[in-house]
Image (cartoon, rainbow, N blue to C red; front, side, top):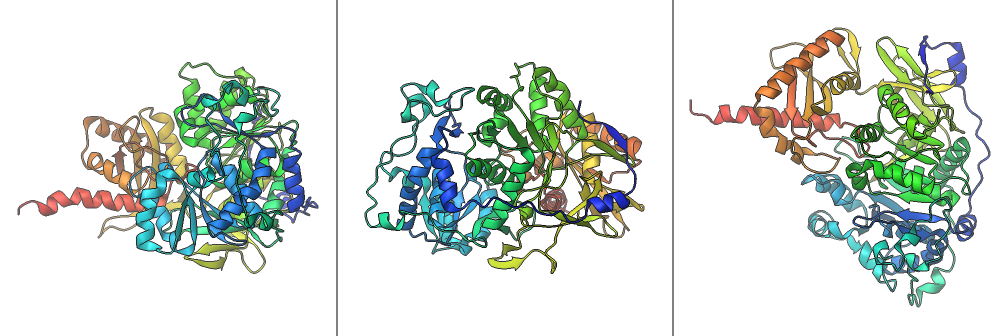
Length: 628
């Protein structure tokens, strides 16, 4: 298909020239008036939102959202939100979310998107992630399922925090939320396959009647936003105990959206985005939701939990809506491949122009396998496209144009894929010594909220250290690994994801695999590798963002070894000795959903070290408490 293996050469003069500053393209400034006018003139386009239990999505025309944004803004002002206020917002994939976001935008407030509690399903994980940031804010617009826990948290940590349930807020607008499609006279009207025009059945979105009284005059015009105003605050889902909220300015957002749109050659009349990505993650929020608003492009949203249960339904939505743009982390493509192998009917993907792969290390076996399997179902050559980005860059740093595909390169025993050329406006440096990638450009945020204080995140020259090791090959970015995840054993550099991929590919009864380097026990010198794996189909909590509590559920199984675990451990040890000549200090078997990961599937290795300490404590406790 679109990949070809190339024996990699060391970085040279050509690659250094490729990393030279890139002259930014003149960005098309979208003034508030221009943004709202684009939505009002969207010619029947809008957002289709799948909801649990409904066979058809709710359709939200951009024209109606634009008309109702000032009404929502008035109501938000009534609950105490003003221009410039940073507002915690439950970013659950529901029909309410777009209207609330646009209301905040009209008002000039700053949304702070956060996951709903059901996305962090393991007990205590939501409290652990959300609790530390509550004292920094004045209002939390939350989902119904979060209310009880948030009341307890706020009472303890942030007594002044005002909690407002989004459903009740929308209901106050008059007739309430958009109805479920099943309740409509003609549910099928909510989906208009191929044409993507506004359905004739206007009941897909209720008229919102509200007497906004004294607030009407204050909300007649949208807030005039300056380049340096904060568009939103994106909290990264890393593994440190101090949450970091990236402060993305209006100029950052506009520059990155323009750069992405130019590289993908997006057009609202031709393109339709389809996404299951969480709206609290930069890839889903910016790359799909905000890009669709920015261009008034059709968007189809599917809740993440629905995708995990029914991954092929995403492809059915692509076929039905003639979707052209979709992206997800590597694990999403793995999930689609596994489900396609089960023999279920696979939809036709001939409409797709670009399938982005990002947010976690990209595996050649996955993208090549996806091309091979789905090429028989209309997927065209060059559509699958690894890309690179991060929240500190707003979103995208490098993207390949549609149909340009990717190449694979070897570096020793390792295989990497190209992630496309830099998008407009970026310049990079590759640091001497470790090859760390430094980025600078109009999309790069300059500050973050850490421990309630605004801190700079770029150096004196405006460069941000991504901590990713990279090369530039023929003008395309290649990510080699993380400087803070690489470990050295016997003088050799090792990347954990290489080890993890080999075990995952060789062991069909293993689900997720993670390894870390830990110091040897007291009295021993050096470090060793500890490898964790989850038994496929074995217990565990729901949800993809596992935490310490789920780990606790797996501790009992980890501290006792079954015959199957012992045989699997022997197989893993032999495999790694044969493949890498790498001795493993420990192999730890866990139940499913125990290894901690971010919403995009990245392993949280700092949390994994804490889990290891829990396991050691649990294993030692019986001996400590037994009679002498």
